[in-house]
Image (cartoon, rainbow, N blue to C red; front, side):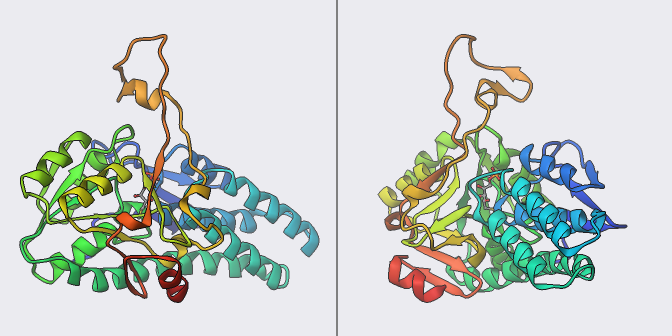
Length: 344
Ligand code: MRU
């Protein structure tokens, strides 16, 4: 696979440059963050989104905060830095990669003397970005073996280069299979209400020259019944100790459909997406977003005023509906407590 035709996030001239995913696919605008508050806002407003990508953004935002800190003692620095960690932790609740990256930066900050800690935190953030891309490549190498020649693959939301430091998790597996010369095609669920599938996944796959067909979220059942889907592959925001997996709202419905039609349902996720502290998916915190996302399609209101809307951003797919989880350390088939404990 050639180099990615775009960069999701970059540390450039001591600023953080983020591709504005709200504007895709019509415009390729960048938000340049000169301070950590700008990065927090970018995560909250989904300028940048996707579990691994928001982890990378938080790490970079914390490094930038450390660099700009005017504190003069180690204690003052740590006090300020940990308060900043808390503000990043409050930006989005579901994807555990965010908390994983914050914890990693926090432990490092506590272990390095002041003021050299500032440079070390910057190096660590860049390392997190680099590792994420390597991790996705490794997942691709394992996962591509699960993709048959001429497969027609369904994906939900966007788990590609845009959702990560680069290359992607679920889409990374697809890219790795394509790199190997497999002729594959993808069906992308539009993924209402934020339309990550319609706006981002189709755009990304098209950039990588992989044939992609956009469908609305209610079409998957018919395609499966007609034998047009050989496998489903999605990303994840948080995986509990028993394999229950939170991912974009609608993933659970796709998993139920795949199960009914006997179609393999794969999750591709790095180890940083596992949360062994939660016994099952019931404990995963689900983000509820502004109802406006449901009332409107783009700028146009599509529902009458005076009614209610429900807008959970994620749902949980029970482990028994997951054929296998693809990670950078290998593939766990029929995930359960012992197999996940062994992996971690
Ligand atoms: O609300 P989003 O767009 O951040 O949700 C993203 C997803 O649900 C992705 O599928 C998940 O983060 C995996 S990304 C590799």
